[in-house]
Image 1 (cartoon, rainbow, N blue to C red):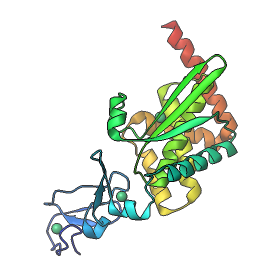
Image 2: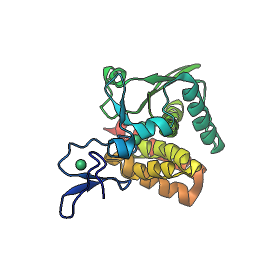
Image 3: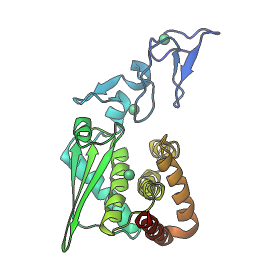
Image 4: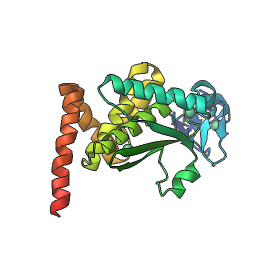
Length: 240
Ligand SMILES: [Zn+2]
Ligand SMILES: [Zn+2]
Ligand SMILES: [Zn+2]
């Protein structure tokens, strides 16, 4: 058994760490993990890492094998696929513009550190504009999932729906899940399971809750559930 960082043997009795992909490393190393695929960063385990200009990094494996979205062409492809999958499920979208953003740009906009995407909608009588921004350099499958999540935020916005945060994020995660499930690859399965493990309660719990509704009653009933929750939630907000 060899260490994926120094490539030396891990002797019996020596402490080691193991990642979700089965890579092992001596416990004494300073270990970095790919924020996307959770591989330990090492020459053997991940072909090293790539550092982006805004200081983020992804592992060499994600960079070489998972098509990071770094240009307009791949972004448009991800956007097209996300939109198409949701349209199949009965969602309609107005004209939406899409852009890549850096971590610094998100922070300047007041987003938290973990932000992957952002939807801005401006709606007035007879006019609506929607803009989606996603973090650049993430694998195209993950980017497509993030866009599907943001598209559902835009759907909520244009329909004037403001459900409880857990329902809101839970619904949007269903969009991401739809993308990851459709490809039926190990990476897709990995990203799907990651939705259930999200450290932020409103995302993971919301996702599990909305997934149950979707699996038992389908998309139309899921939309009705969100609309009713929004009505009741707004009633409570106004009563306060
Ligand atoms: Zn080692
Ligand atoms: Zn990776
Ligand atoms: Zn969201």
